[in-house]
Length: 111
Length: 113
Image (cartoon, rainbow over all chains, first blue to last red; front, side, top):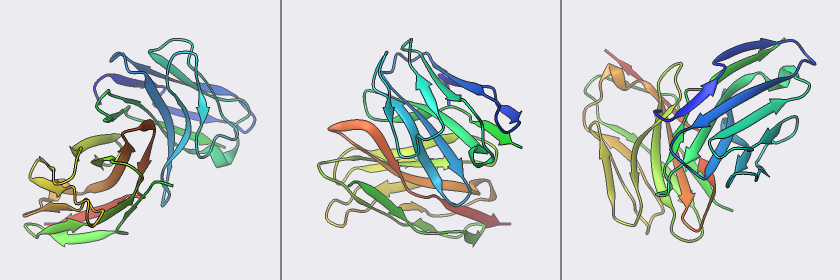
């Protein structure tokens, strides 16, 4: 997981609160991704970015927003958290050889 | 669309047993194929990969061969250890459009001492 850093690692939110997860990579990768992982459902793509200033929706984008103002950073925002957003969130970036590298995960609980 | 199907778990084996976790894929073009491993409380780590037909990826005693004729990438290990207990994910990335990586649903492996 070297090179992809996520913060924070753990967070508890109340319903309706907002927060931002930060992903940073120092490998100069163009492509970056945000996934969520839930029991029995594997990894689901929330949003992704193919370069600085670009973002696109993945499989489950509702309730989330993203920004890629700098190439090395990909931010995931929850404007009004809901209990259904309790999950483990993984950021990832893609090498030129199409290998994806993951951060260590952010555990989010919405109560 | 592109997809990955892997055998459902959990899979429970005794130490030193032979392991196979099946993975098949559907994709247009010629994808790269991967196996990732996730240990409890951690993120996913790349275990091995293969980028073209008949390639064999290997790492830590695990192997998988890219079989285009059967669209498969089965993970094997000759003698598993307790430390291999984890969740294993098969994945593909399409060479022509790497905007998305497709993951299987994961297979939980538990090894008994």
